[in-house]
Image (cartoon, rainbow, N blue to C red; front, side, top):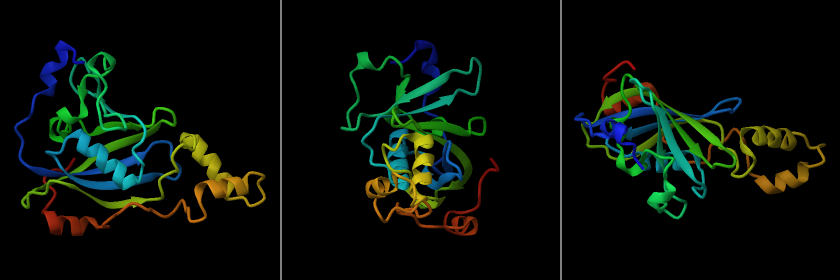
Length: 221
């Protein structure tokens, strides 16, 4: 799986236990669909995958992967392999496109002041691309080891609706009772679907409330 030339970039960094504030935005969404997440920097990217699935209310039955551009020359594009929907990894001979597994790399081993953005792709058919941006870093004095969704805007698109373009078309149809496919699409998404309402669990916190709970922002990213 790993290129021998890249092995040195996957070493664990000696960093303190901290909390990362991440803003995760669904690419191609207009207006933007996003979530703000607090997560331990010691969590792996496998943990982050589960956090994204939870706060976006995805169903986790499609393939996924993480990727990022290594900030130093030769600026490799690093691809992290995610698990199959059945919670297993494919055999080694089927993973030649990937550099490392997501459960083998912590967030603090990738994110830094020189690398603030990572991409997350969910569903290789619909291609739901998420941009993950490191916004702030807080002290982790309470040994916070999990994740917490503290903000966001707009509902997650229904699974298998055709990606960002298919979702925009779906919104146009269900927003027009005179459209010939209106009844069919309303039945498909459900009467209670509202593109403005977030279903996933969230503990909304203002920037001031976050600092009061976790301490002052350690670095201006």
